[in-house]
Image (cartoon, rainbow, N blue to C red; front, side):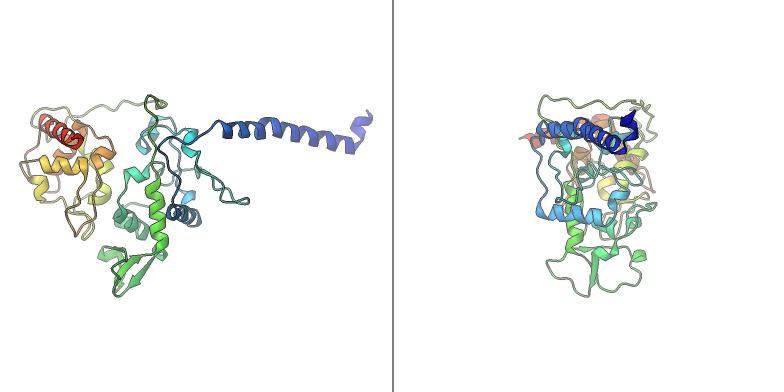
Length: 337
């Protein structure tokens, strides 16, 4: 009973048990995990600018609303090609002895998960405009604007990166809106966020609790093809730039309303743009290869095309799945040569 009456013995014993358990339960397993964890082949460390962008990402509070973790549940499939694994974070180290900004995995998704955002939305023009005024590109966005990452110049230098902001969001600003180096670094960091492909032969974890989505007939398809919902696919893959009304943004993203590319009976260029992107219009931002980046199937591409050809006053004939498949196969063969 003397042991329980001696507060010094009790404290020392409790302290020893705590330290021992900490060593066994936390420290030793962590050291072992570090030794057995290596970056995926093909992954690359952040560049100087990307690392500066990461610091800006933290300083501006982006970590409060955006996660960087794709869980192995089907509802997360929209955020990445596969569930995340420890090796995805192997290159991330402490900022210094006092600061640990390791994985930035986050705790909630007030905004979308950013694990693979560099692949989902690689356009610099879109990302800069989204930072300056999110509602200019996503009307219902609740993200705050970050205008302090930009400055106004009467005449921009040739080396400056300017953004085209719709008149309703300029608020009487006279001159050109130029991205600061911090804004460019932040976008560089966002564009660096891409899932590294697994080594050949390695299979990713499966997404669990998969909910089968029934296919619905596309009303625009005269061929009787049973296609996915083109409107939903457009919203997921195209709407961020071309807008819900298809009118795009003046000086940034082209309108699809009355577009010759959309309405032309020869759809080869249309399919090529969706699958391989487009960079032939000086007045507009470069379009990324949406179809390839998002692994769109021929059925999905057909549904998107038919949606765009029959929406917002467009009145073109629908295309068939067979037509799109042939063009996609031809484009694939051409790119492999």
